[in-house]
Structure formats: C-alpha cells, structure tokens
Image (cartoon, rainbow, N blue to C red; front, side, top):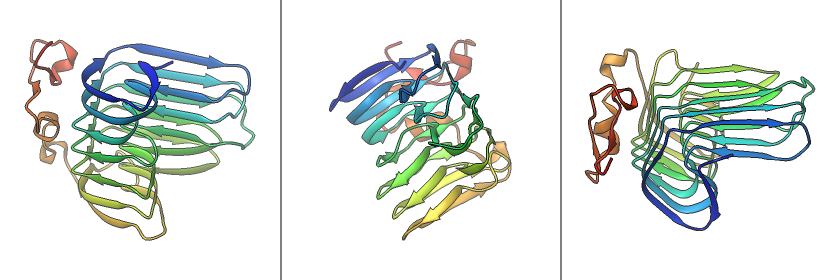
Length: 231
C-alpha cells in the first residue's frame, strides 16, 4: 500500500494523511510509502502525516518510507508514524525503514518529525534514509524518535547505513537514536551535528519552504504543521 505507484515521474505539491495497514502472510516483498511507491525522478514540496503499519508473518524484504523513492527528494517532511514488525524471529532479509526516502536518493531540505518503530530480525532505519549509497543528504533534520528491536540493527537518527556518501549541514536531536549514522562504510563524509534540545532545532517551515509553497497552519488541523498554499 502506498499513495501512488509508478515509475519515472516527478511529484510536486502533494500530501497524504492516509492510514495504511499492510499484513503479509506470504513471501512477497513489501514496498510501502506515504507519497510515492516505485521509483520517481523527483519528489518535492510534499508531506506525509498519516500512519503506515506493516506486519509480516515471515521475514521478507521490506521497504517503508514516509515520502518515497526518487533520485532527488527536496523540500519534504514526514510527520507520520511508521511501524514495521516481523512475527518470525529467525534472521533473514532486512527491513529498511526511512522517515523520508530510500537508497540512492539525493535528499535536501527535508525534515522528519514522525516516530519510527521497527521490530524485525535485521533492522536498517534512518530518520531521513535507511540506506544512503553513493548519494548525499543536505540541510536535513530529524527530531522524530526511533525505536528498534532486533538481532542485528543498523540505525541512526539521520541515516541507517551510509556508503560512499556525503552528509552536509544536517542535524539531529539528542535521544532520537544513539548516533546520527548507524553504520559508516566506504568513504563517507559526515558533516552532521547533534542538537541537545528541541528548542534549538529550527522549525519545519524554515527548512522545507525554499520555494514558498508551504504556509503555517495553527487551527489545530494537521497538528499545526505546515500545509501547502493551495490547501
């Protein structure tokens, strides 16, 4: 289940508040995203403020993202809740859970404030991305709490695993995870910074509104998080 699933496209100025529940009893791969499933060229100016709840009886391949998979992801935020669990405790294929997007994405000006819970034999979890490969994140922030239980875990407040990648001017809140990056591989440049209190973190709107398409909304709709100008 996901908002939309197509290949090779650009998505701009959209949002989802869906509650997505996936229960899998066979060996099929799970691919669930709040905005976009499959692979896109560009996702920008989007947000997810719903819930994705995935349960599988056996340890199958899982990819769960607050926003989605794309070559470029810009000016997006996730305020939703992601919960992924496997009932079988025998280690097998890992679960990849990202507050924003999947592997091989260049991600900029994005913010995760949503909570992530992953209960699987092998967990790869990041507030921004679970698996950054030959890519970069720039000016990204995470203040969402990450909870992980499993035999083998690679999780970080910003990135689960980073391989031959670059982290530029990105910040994470203390106690959301033990570190910014769960595992560093290859030649990875880490220019991230830990922030000790939520008061020191910038607002979501400051980070994502580079194109001026979002606005503050304080009438207790969307939990007072930014909405798109056209809403």
